[in-house]
Amino acid sequence: MTSEEIDEARKRLGLRLRTFRKAAGYTQLELAKQLGYSRARIAGAENGESCAALFWQCCDNLLNADGALIAGYEEIETLRQKRAKEAAEAERRKRIVAADAAQEASRQGAAEKLHGFKARSHKFITAYVGHDIADQLANRERAKPTGGLWLDSQSARVAHSSGICTLHIWPFGVAIFHLVEEITMPNIASLALWRIRSYAENLAWASHRLGATLGKHITASYVLGAYWVTEPQWPDQHLDNALRIMCTPRILLQREPSNADQEQAQAEEAERRIFAAGHDGSGLTSFGLSGVSIGYASWSGVVYHPISPVQSLTEDDLVSCELASQAIWTYCDHINSQVESGHDPVVPDSHGWKFLRGTRSRLLNPRPQETGQHRAMRDAIVATSGLIGHLDHAISALRETMNQ
Image (cartoon, rainbow, N blue to C red; front, top):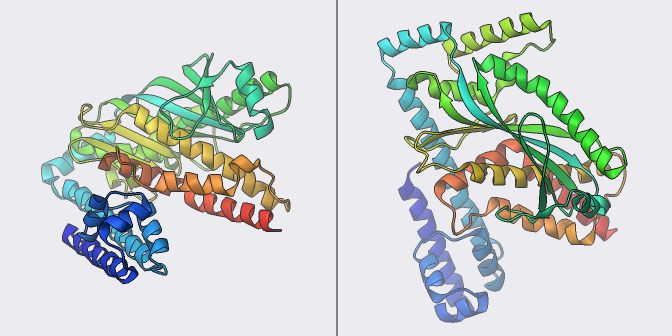
């Protein structure tokens, strides 16, 4: 898949737009006024420039294209995503091929000696508290409106013994504790064990904190982790492999826990074994940029290392994306759980299916100020979380309930 093929597909779509426009009797300027865009935008689209899904949807509806323009846009998106995956895979293979026999011997040696790292751990501890008491929670915590996030929310700093913690509250009834901890680990096995043990403590703490504040029983749902690696100690040729393992640390642990010493030894042996074989990338989506950063997302969470901090994404970029994704995931999970229990979902009108439809659009469509790195990060996090399927089920359930 080449960029030329994508360009040709955009030109074909532009020609299709021109044909429908002329058939409808519009000039470029007249169509622009009808749609609320500039004439330059219409001309650019007809010449093969990239435009957002909303633009093509509006053109399709106004020109009675019967889905032809949207289908053309979706074809381009499929091609673009395929090219991105091919480029990421080609880059991965290039790094592997670049390792000669001496590097291979070095890799075997590195597998015997495990390396440590320093990172900032970002934990997103989620809970559905209910839309009816979200304001009550915000008032009791003295939360203030939060700027710079993808979805409107309020936040307040809360005390936590192990790091900096901020409580974010959304009006549709979701609360997320964002806990930031500075960690130094001797190896990834230690991270895997710390992660699973601390998650249980974090859930118990969050449930107790919410329950004490609200005077009612609240159960925190889950913890999602993201690691911003600041000081990796692996040799450069092993860094990518190490971050892949970090993104799926559960693979180092046994299904059945044993005593602490055995667990540590077993996890370290698993780390050596996977280092020696190389992590094949199963379950991971890359969003790094060669020479700038290494980033991976999985169902378990996210890991990111800024090789060039002045060119890479910022920590706030990653945090804002995860906060929005996990807030909507938790809200949709509440809706879908009601359906699975045999009940019609009950939500406020202001946060019904139309709100979720708009949120889906914001999560999927590129923003004018975004870079390719931002888009790759968002696509990776949304894809590996299963959020779109979760959203679609919730939207469908709410629409069915409304039409009854």
